[in-house]
Length: 373
Ligand SMILES: Cc1ncc(COP(=O)(O)O)c(C=O)c1O
Image (tube, rainbow, N blue to C red):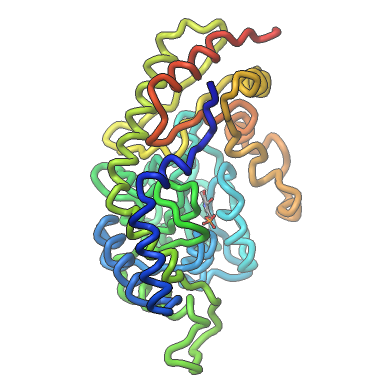
């Protein structure tokens, strides 16, 4: 049996007709940038995320950049974030000349350790930017509390977490802004790059709309220097076809995750393995299902590969150890939890179309793994 890490073709089969009609509609209109498709997607996403506004842009990476630009983040500023995320999180901060200040993670959730955040705040801290990793919200209340006390806005990197909740509140609705990615592998993925920002703040929404079109107030009239980061109509049209299925797909992912955890907890393995922990009162949308296997991660991945099971590490090098951030002066050993997670975790296949038989096969293959020491 083959169990790929992800099977986008299976999903496409279920939306193919709608996607093809939507693409044809846009082609027939010959309106490709920031038109009705984008406006309607923005309004659906704002409603879904429980925010007043949503502003489409070219990618999740640009959503982060635009959010920080809208807060005037610049050289000399510090932005608190996690060292255990996709590169774009820290890159957005560094691109503006500001300094990413990393705070180690909670080893249970892999999200920023909120107990350490207050101590990392300095007079230069301009933004707190948690990441909702793997589809589970960072613990928002303590972060929002530090932000309130110190007058620092919170921007959510919700790229992996559309529809996740923390005590009933949707990802992207708790901080001043939320940043989402429509990269094809996301729970709601387009046919290429795309992203969106959410906010309840009228002024921020207006500024984001301006910044994504080169800071233009009217055509050829520029109030400030923005970037070109527009969501195109083709992407928005494809996303609108998939959007009504998002909750069902995320629910399916959660069911698969629960089934994996049940099978793995009952498996009586000969080596330690930790399944993902879901925080109480939270909805985890399982963008990734990530297990922890101290000491044997790479050997287990090799073993699963020989059995036809796809796995991947998100992320093998913590951000403070990336070569391009060496100028920040961080050293290995400084964020032991992030470093351990990078060494010990791996993602198993999880997607709505994954079958029970495939899951049983994956867990059987894990049971048959014999670590060498
Ligand atoms: C946590 C996180 N932040 C930011 C991004 C960037 O999104 P994009 O790939 O759409 O630029 C991603 C996507 O991969 C992500 O996972």
